[in-house]
Length: 220
View (tube, rainbow, N blue to C red):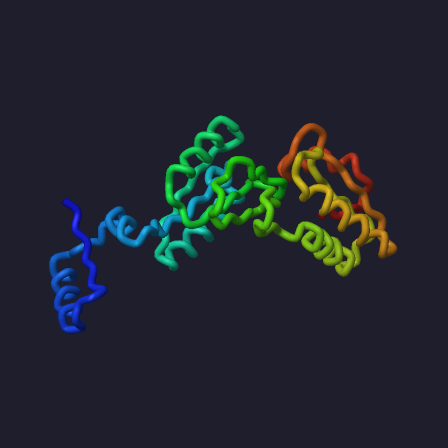
């Protein structure tokens, strides 16, 4: 049997006594029973690709956990990687749970597919632009970030600056950063170079290709 403590109509003195007894007995509220009574689950779901398993983006989920815990909500995390079948199953699972909010996150700044998501549930995009009418999305300001970095190098007196980047993807960050870099360089007397890593991404490989650039040079 499942029991819940409902003190809505109890006298104040009775409420105090019941709560003291509950504390003494180590009573833990049954979440399932509470949801039946209140018609609320206090559950928020996070549907992500590979945020949880990467060393760069996992703190995004850490921030979500901090906020939901402080608000006494349960966080359900569904990590599907790049597997469309897994994502479809995860969305189907969300339809079977009475979630009160949904966060759709991405490993990198890109368009987020909103097809099939539960209707009538507040939904937010994280690190991507969510393709759902009326949905709010939170993304990094790639343009200002690249602009600030370039201005810093210019302010340090550098005149030959290279921006090393990856091959084009479905993400927005690359083009926004390059645009900011080129615009900032154009407004100065410095020379700028955009260098794309052949067939790869990430800074560890960039050292192998710096010899192709003019020297002396600073890399942004």
